[in-house]
Picture 1 (cartoon, rainbow, N blue to C red):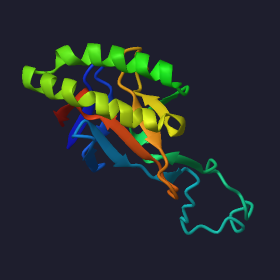
Picture 2 (tube, helix red, strand yellow; picture 1 turned 180 degrees about the vertical axis):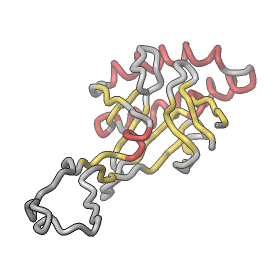
Picture 3 (cartoon, rainbow, N blue to C red; picture 1 turned 60 degrees about the vertical axis):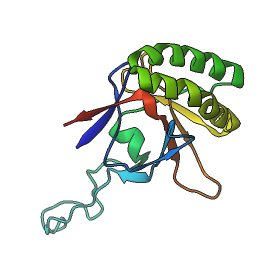
Length: 168
C-alpha cells in the first residue's frame, strides 16, 4: 500500500486505495470521494428478544452517520472558506515553503506550472471546501473539495508536488 503524506507536515492525506487523475499539467490530482454510512449496523444474532425478556424494538446501536470516505479515512479537518485574496496569500506562502523541499528538476516544473494550477483553483474558489490533515498545522497543504455539476459525491483536489509517497 502507498500512502501520500503532506511534504511539509507528514500528515497522511491520501492512499493508493483512492485512484487519482492528473490535471493542470500534472500539478493537481483529482480524486473522487463518496458519501458512506457509518454506525447503526443491524446485526441479527438469531436470538428472539421477546423470548428472552427483551423488547422487540430494542436497539443498542448508535445512529447512522453519513461521512465522506476520504475525509473520514485520513481524518481531514475542514477549514473556513478562503476569499480570493486570502487564497493567493496562502498559495504564495505555500509555494515558498514547498519549493525548497523539491529536487532541482521538480522545482523548475513546479515553478512553471503552479501559476496555472492556482488560476484553476481560483476559478472554483466559491465552490471549494478546504481541508487540512489531522495535525492542523499552519503550514499544512490544503486539500480542496467541490461538487461537479450534477454530482452527489465530492471531488477532491490535491497539489501533487505537495505529496510525498510512502510505501507501507
